[in-house]
Amino acid sequence: MPDFILITGDRAIFNPTFGKAIVVVRPGILTGTGRATVNKKTICIDGDEKKVLVPGCSYTSPPNVTPGTGILSIQSLAINQRARKVKSRRKAVLLKGSIFTARFQVILPAQVPPTPVSPPIPDPIPVYIGTGFFTTTNMKVKGT
Image 1 (cartoon, rainbow, N blue to C red):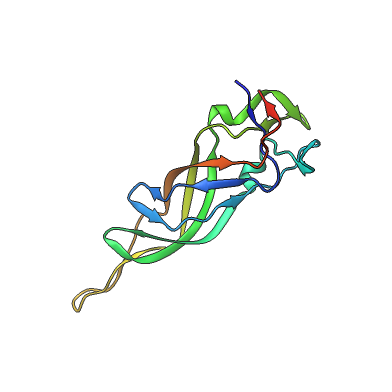
Image 2 (cartoon, rainbow, N blue to C red):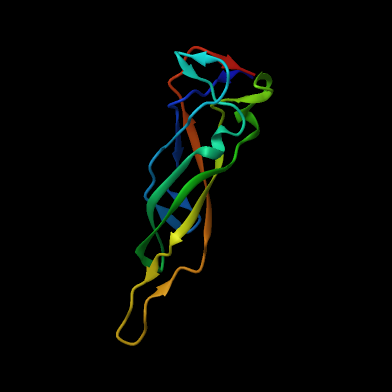
């Protein structure tokens, strides 16, 4: 089924719930490396999603209510987010599709606040998995 081709400047929108962690999300921006252009912007191809990184996002993970920080990225695409037929540079063109799998890599762990009898306790989980989706400014060109 045809879907819109992703282009430079399109956004990866991350959902804020990553398991029990709640992340203060910001969008990631795609940079295309394909040969063709749409609306004078380079199309995105397989692998371009790996370059989407959103550092410095704060999060909490109850009972770790003192915020920590981490990096958002795209872990894997849904099957309908890679074109099966349309290619550029011998790689599949990226499509808007449905929902991708997102990754939140903890850099500074959230903490359970200290009490008079105990020190702060850091979040023991180094990576959280969530979801996200793409938005595109391309409303003309579709691929399959």
